[in-house]
Image (tube, rainbow, N blue to C red; front, side, top):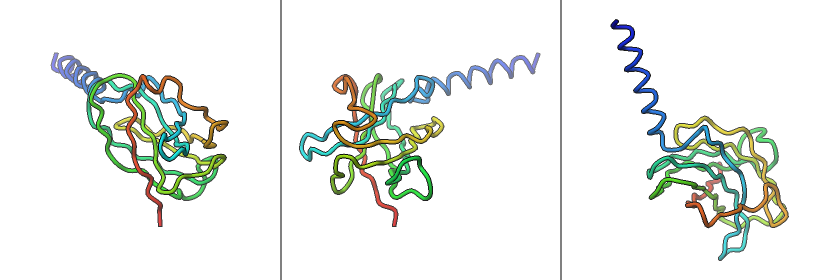
Length: 149
């Protein structure tokens, strides 16, 4: 009887913890890019589903080459606050605009979700992944990339 009660309690705590995690890890992540309207450079974005308004901790090593090999060249490590649940995204701003055709690769960790597989980007209007579709439908927050010295 005690084991069953503990199992039920643990199950409820597990389900509640998952639901309160904020980022829906099971909904998947979409890589895309947006053009900054002022600087006119293209910036990598990760889109996801947010279960509730909250602050999300983001860690993302960045490589200046495809396939996330070797030591990263830059790092994103910070918090972004979203004011409502639903579709959301995070874009990365580099100190100096990167030219079209620049290859990057990243591994994103959002909140309590496991890190994504390596995501390759080629920045620009004809880049890969393509421009975000429906970007106006989601909240998009920004973080600055910090070079690793």
